[in-house]
Length: 181
Image (cartoon, rainbow, N blue to C red):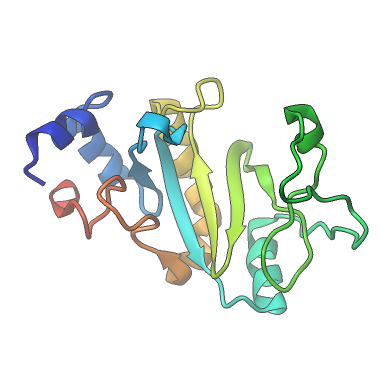
């Protein structure tokens, strides 16, 4: 993309050469630049797996990754729309994954000794990685961790959604082919 202001933002923390090296090293994870501003997000590596949305399919994918499908009791307290809660009170609510299974959102899990944020969405499972000590950053340590976690994604390679985030903030062969040459 040839937008000077955008390129300054995109390469503000990591050079074009460094991001190109990451692109060639990683098979499934993609570097996604933070939206910034008031979004409160950070840079991350992202991979997404397509789900059929059926109970057996969701269980199969979670099982391949070694992620528990923790059931949530029907009577588990949930926040009431329009009611304010302190941050501490809100953290006590169980986050329920959307879909046919009433299970807890996986959240932060460990795959092969590496921390990954795993989140179920309708039709997809997202795996996100950033620096454990600086969660808004992608560092060389995160790239090394992502390379190791990609081994867990190999059996699901035919289900990977690329790009996992369909916009210019997510570098993929579709959006920035020059990094994969």
